Length: 415
Image: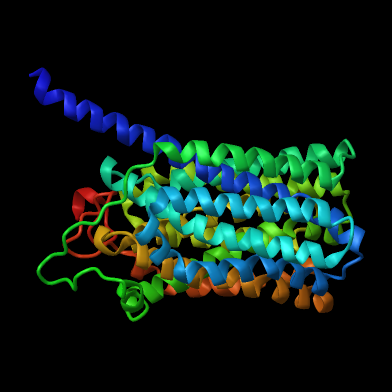
């Protein structure tokens, strides 16, 4: 009996260790991003940027990510998710250090540093989602939204610490440089717990895996629709991350500290929704849960933009954050339903989704110049409407076991 159960216990410990390691790298990614985002108003003021100019500065992060993501699947296939996260996290943190020091000199170092931040985070994002999907399959239940809740925990921590740094008048340089050092040391240690990447044998009716798997994924209608679905939620999340603080400050005439707290409220709602959301996914299925949350998100955006006072605006950002929370992680899980093609499909979906971060900042900045930043965020509602129409694309693949036990978007017990 002992010899039979020992391997099972060892495997369980490995999975548990991988789950904790995956949480750690998601948290680290969110913490790094929010640390930068929390200081955007100070960087804007130092560099004297108009909304449209700031939009193009933020574009440099997305540009780096969009360049990195299409090749991320091949990189992961060659080096594995552990080495990919380790290397790209170090690249991203080097870029953050350049921003921390270079912003004292002018705009160009900031743009260069942010480009390398995006370049690193782009492949880091794909690799940690591939590892998350692997851990999810080993557990046999939905957990991907909780990994993304870990990302949100990191963003909340980063935003709250950022608010404290603003209140204490700590310089952007000191703040971001310390964050870069902490992440650069912590992530390489955390990935030691990752599971080795799987390369399952293809089924008889599947095309064998090869270096051209990523190209094949770009021709799959379901993968492309999921990419568009993820893009809508990435746009909603990215707009919140980049512009909520400024919309509070400029649109409601509040202080920088209160604007940063509004950003933290948005992130807190997103975190809680991602933590408790998997139970809803397991019980009711992906499609009905996401459609309901999309309506909640739309209501939140409208309340935030048209709220008569600051209190209503805070309610709006809470609904906005809670409603969008599951879209991105569920889209990633849907792309990884078939483990044989998880890396290339997740790479394609992430590449499409990150176009929201590429186009979003200049779009909101341009609209902000003409209609104010607060009114400009209504663009989020348009893309969420598109996402609601194509939510059916995230249903689990027929014949492939899904972590949540779903088959067609109905509750697991009815599927």
